[in-house]
Image 1: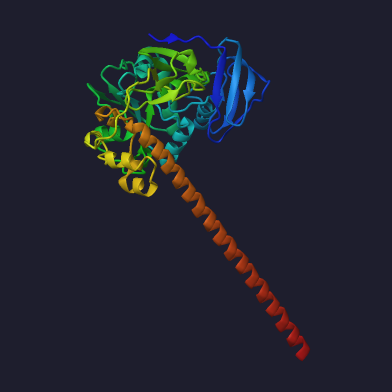
Image 2: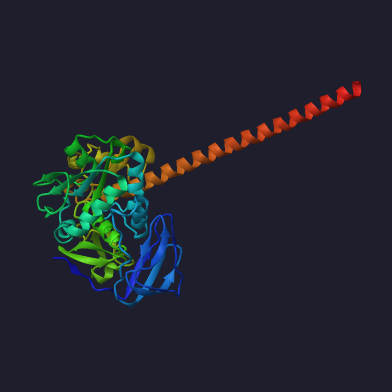
Length: 412
């Protein structure tokens, strides 16, 4: 059973990538109204007054905890694919399995690649997380409506369900089912789903759409179904200390956790955060107590190497991650890390290996972006220099032509 967390007195929000606030300090925002637009839409979970809003964060004080009412529902069969996709975008749907990528962009990319199969990811193999299982048991109608909407948007007929045997998903109208009795901790990753079900191997840099598949988390499909019914995404189901609750997006973690730190996400792939200033966002699928174990020095036993499903040299990556040595990390394949977290329980020294590798990946991504920006700037500078040289040569040629004409006129 999913319980509902009461609304707090205050909500916190971060500005999304490529998005802008639609609010200013002092504004009164009705429940369900957008507070940011752009690539990522966000909406107020209740009627609030904006206590503070700067470039990156906003603090909203709740003045009326009445939940937002629905917009006009859409008929999936009578609505165009573009209008359905617009509803998904403006409802603020993002990947609820943990990725957080805007769903409308994922579906738009899938449509451009002409995908032929929707894969419903209901594996939920992360220990301690059961929010997807709770949704599948109580929200079958919304999930089915989300499936129908994605079928319509992408014009596909084949839907495959990949689920753990503990999932109550018998009511879903799908074409094929892939039920795993005891899924391993990595079976929910896209690349392993496609490998196990369709024998499709994704090479580094490839995505499911490159092979004709789009993978959607079952919670994301539930949110799409609610969006079609007129509900914007202002809350999500999260496993909190083992119980599943509807939590408002923007709920401060201090409302749930009394310690200074907490683990957000699963026991394997989750991460430890400071509670002060942290909030529930669209990717928060689990909240639990953080481990208080004191890490010991690495003894280079290699158990993390053996545990890695991508067969990466984790010990070497850990060695060159603090401080990050970008060139070496690139050569060792850090970019191929799927962040499954299996390296952590394998470590006898209780080192948070995944957190170290995540920080190093952030540095690696930033360095690649810097290189890309530098290369683009150099390309533009070279093109600009070439254009100026061409223009100068053209002016000189016109001067020579005029001089030749004047000399010809004088000789005549």
